[in-house]
Length: 238
Image 1 (cartoon, rainbow, N blue to C red):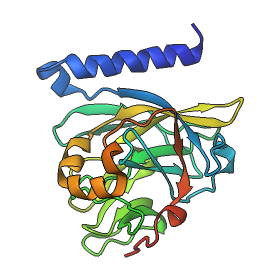
Image 2: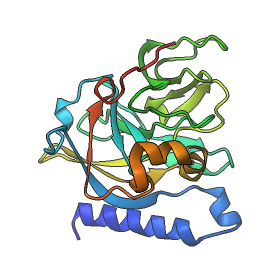
Image 3: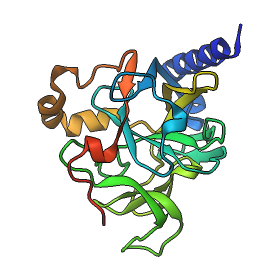
Image 4: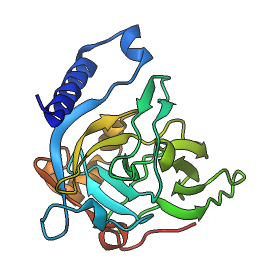
């Protein structure tokens, strides 16, 4: 069994275990949830080259469902493994960034407080380069994901840990694999507090208009990556 098969088998096994275990053992630790392996591609449908990503730039793709957006970031610095907890106090170990510099990370773009997310018309949430500015609390860091709707701030270099605002858990992490030989990226699953059920309940009508009946479909095969500015007409800054 080669390395990729080993990783895939482990991810599948963890996902199966997560879906079947109940009770105190499962409540104590959040485990990876495996979804389909999805290759990230550019706007022409070609495999995205990780080395072509601009550092500290917002990129968006959809995973694990057709209507659930994800931020893809090259932080320009290593992102090391971090221990975190969900709002239900499930602990988990975020594995850190991937790629040659361990700087590539991906997180659900659905804010953990009010489920704000980027649409084609408007986005109140995005990665912000430089010192954090939070009107509600003193600045606690730099290069953060900031939600203007409630001023929640997440540190993508530490697993999208909450640094400010009312959010009570990190953004759900999207697990990535980087193939060094081809310089390609593949999404394989999630880790942490998923909010997809709440998201679909809250925005059922809106999502049906935006994505039609495929909104809740699991992404299959490929997912297109675009810069936020090319995906969204108005990325709000606050």
